[in-house]
Image (cartoon, rainbow, N blue to C red):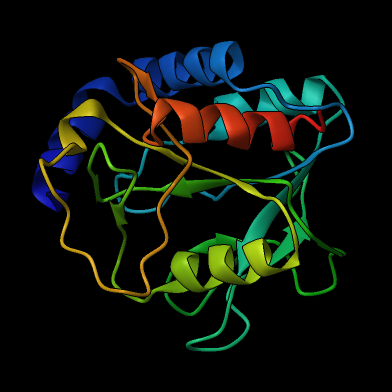
Amino acid sequence: MRAARARIHALEATSAARAVRDRFLAQIDVPQNAVVAAYAAFGGELDPLPLLEALAAKGVALALPVVEAKAAPLVFRAWEPGTPLVQHRFGMAEPPRDAPALVPDIVVAPLLAFDRQGYRLGYGGGYYDRTLAALRKRGRVLAVGIGFALQEMPNVPRAPHDVPLDWIVTERAALAPLAADARADHWMSWKGF
């Protein structure tokens, strides 16, 4: 899947990132006072920067993940487009440790692979699963995976600790994997009705 993602990234990275931005904004209601956490693209991941720039232009608070400890949930630190990032020991870029920590309302997660049930594969460290589980214990959080359509698999291998996403957005579609009645209940609670 990494090789396939790298091939499409080389051919369609910019146009796919813009299409994902447009589909995300058309389908997902982001309240003005929401905190949206995303990531700095790494190793062929779909770049969320066009989406983050559009959200910043609307005044939405943004955050990026910081790995503070192995086998622990991610911490999200405030970030704005154009603000320099520092390199983590694994080569990923993240905000400096002195940036304020924020609790996100929406988490935009990278994908190595995904299925229509909302499960994703990442790099195998379980960081997003631990993070989403911890956030959901505190309250509502909307989890949106973004990636290329070719990353879809019929069924992603999963373990009991894997946490499904609420939405998956690709350059071709915005998918809400929950069953229709569960999705309606989820959205009613998300929007505060």
